[in-house]
Length: 308
Picture: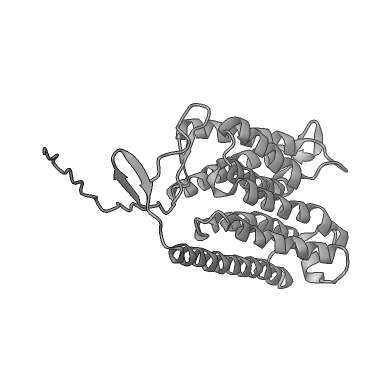
């Protein structure tokens, strides 16, 4: 009786490569960025040209999830503490009459949003990290609602973030500001240039336009005597520079890769459109803290393409 030789196959141990992840979005003229995510790969055993997934013990997932929760919770506490310290510092400077109230309010407008966005990399790679980050402006949103409805009185808060010192002002510009922070965090997060550019224009561009316009705004824009050429030029320039700088900052962490010549053109387009919208007469109309970030999101979406 003929015997057939026995074929033995040696299984190679699974290879764990933490950063093994092909680009989800190829670089193209319409979408000049790539995304890279740090994910933990499942071990793979290749046998007979078939792919089998080796089950990882449930305990491994539990430990990993626990680490993400601890890191994100700690990051949230840290950012909330930093935001409170920032506002308190400028309140103290205002009370000591080192800087005037209007300048303090605008510096808080500029720095709070940019520093908040700059803290995004300290959160984990978990899909829930964006919601932990969104808790920071959400808590501020609740605070503005409570004081804006006069359920609780806080004169220091009212003086630091309002123009005329009225509680109901908290329900307009300051509230719109934190709502835009929440929207950009939840919808775009750090994986898309759209949210980064829109927040940069709202915080940096719009904020600096008011400061420069009040001090050097001698020559007014013909179609809006409330705005000046100095303010609009500074908004475009500073908004463009901050947007580009923040994009470079996030690209260092590998959240997306940029085709810089195309990116600079697109950021300039967003800055130009946002500056034009900010210069329009809107007395009694749409607040700049809504119009500037929303039009920046739309223009950036048309330029970069949507990245969920």
